[in-house]
Length: 253
Ligand SMILES: [Zn+2]
Image (cartoon, rainbow, N blue to C red; front, side):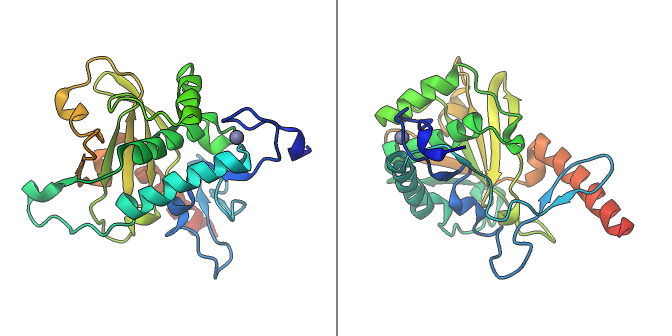
């Protein structure tokens, strides 16, 4: 296919499309090791057969965005990395320290980053992203992103949760398949990368104040709760099954 004849998924202009990472580059920082081969191994949850797949050597990308839109998204990513995702947060020493509030954030930039994550996962065609279908929200989010409109804090709000350390694995290396979720009666989507869970709320009606109050707000504050991987049911199930599959494959070699 000639990439020059395609239209950008965000602005719709006909352009040469970039190899756009669906999850941002920073998601792969602790995952890809350029000094070894294979650089990245995808663990699939299969009942039988091989589970490791080494074909995704530079992460998951698709021809999605024109250069201009790609640059916009990279600016959001850079800001998200500097302001939240690459910040070294002190580990909580006691249970009441598990809630961390970050302040002084740029609401539009960080919110647009979060929106861009959810939208890209919804728009991606690759099998890794098949569990997420945003339906009519895909177009609503596309328009918001195209206009650089971050919307209200509870519009596609997202709970951001750093993972507590786990024995034997570096939690920053966990990059799970995006899941569709049903949380507190709301349709949502759960993304996991770089040591964080991102729980998006897609429907907006009557979100509990405790939840909505944790979303990034217009004052530039976001409330995060240090969490165990196992606190997220889809991740707990995935982890248990992956461990079985990895052991089985290791035994079969
Ligand atoms: Zn574009």
